[in-house]
Length: 475
Image 1: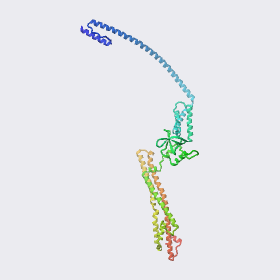
Image 2: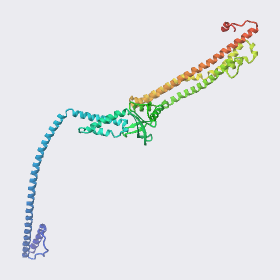
Image 3: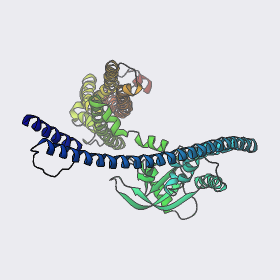
Image 4: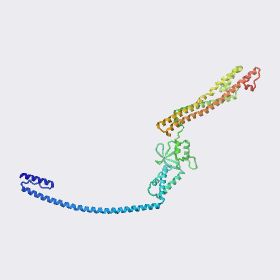
């Protein structure tokens, strides 16, 4: 009995825990009657709790039903609105198509005209970006680029703006303008300076020519300037206030001027010839110095000989002719010598004077012959470099071959450049020396004939005539 009572109490405790019923602490039932009473009380409380839950559930169900009814009503209204909007969209789409058709029919060729306008605006903007005039009007291309990228029909104002920029470009292209602009110096720092611009062709500041930088919309001093005659013309143009002056104009808008400035000068060309070029120049310089020295020497000798010709009877030892005359006339006892001995002595005196007169001519002849040969060596070296570049790159790109070919041609030009002047120098020196030697030969021969005549007269023999003297009868 007690065991059954314990099991019942345990079952009641479990049921109470599962239902979540708050019960007051009670003592344990001591008998079946007490257990029955407690069970009945618990059941009554559970029924009350279940009735409250059922009431709450019914209340929530009615509320959810009301919400569902409202949602169904809103959905129905939205579906109706959607059908109305869909019908209106279809109607608007139909109306838009009809209006597009009307616009197309009424515009006619205006669509093509506006397309051409946008194309012209784009081309004009690109041309203005590269134009030097944009340095003075830097913001003029913005409106044109906006017009070129527009998807709408251009307005009258935009069309007038395009026309105005085209007209201003044409007008400024024919003007010589003076302005103050920011000029990028060689150091990279911008400075405000006075600039003279000849249309879109060339600009100059302080006698220096300027490049236009399209990305920065500024003018910059060229890293290399043209020759002095161009810079002098630029200074003259900047200083002019009226009238007309000579000034260079580059019709290619800077391309020709840049190519002209980038051309290597004489020293750079010589450096491109490398070692062979230096050897050729050394030979030429040595030959020129020796030729100049010998030319001065022969000129001085020629003047001395001419002075001596005016006073043959009074020979002086400061010139070759005087020394030749003194070699025979210095000792009067030689007048009675045999004609053969006298001729040999005179010839000896003449031969003694010839080497100083003809010196350096052999070296000049050598330079004339060696110049083209040295140039040929440089040509061969340049061609070897060219073929090596072709072999290494595997292509015949003209830029790769230009270095070797340039070296070859420069060596050839240098070789011919020293040979031709040395040839003329040698010819001139030979002409001067031959003139002096001819004078020495004539005077020595005349001196010999005069002594022979004196000897014949002393011996009582008739003197030879001019014809006999000419054919050597006197000998």
